[in-house]
Amino acid sequence: MKKAQREIYIKLAETVDYAPCSFCKYSECVGCNDGECKHPLSDRGGFPYFDGDLYPGDDCWGFRPQYNVSTTADVVGVILSKGWQSAGWGENKEGQLVVWGSGDWE
Image 1 (tube, rainbow, N blue to C red):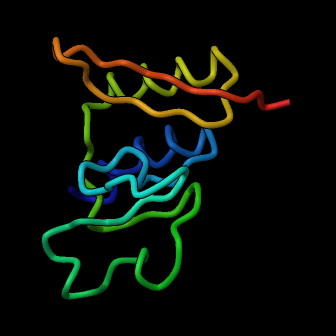
Image 2 (image 1 turned 30 degrees about the horizontal axis):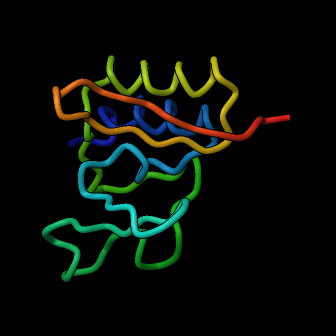
C-alpha cells in the first residue's frame, strides 16, 4: 500500500490516540494495549516497530488495513462517541463487527 493510501488510516488511528498498528491486519494483540507485528517480511527488518514502538501519527511501510476505510472510520466513531480510552474490536460468530471498550478520556 502506498504512503498516500495509508495516510487516512494513520489519521483515523491518531484521532483516538492509537498507532496505525491498531488497524493493521498484521498486528496481533499479545496483552493489554500491547501488540506485535506479524508481517511476513518482518524477519528482514526495516519496520519502524523494530526500531522502537510506533506512536500515533507514525507511518509504517508494511501497514495493511484490517478493514476498509469506512469500517475503520466506524470503529473510530464508536470509540469517540463512547469516550473510551481503550477499545478492542473483532468479529463475532455471525461475522458481525463488535467494538468494546472502557475508560473515559477525561
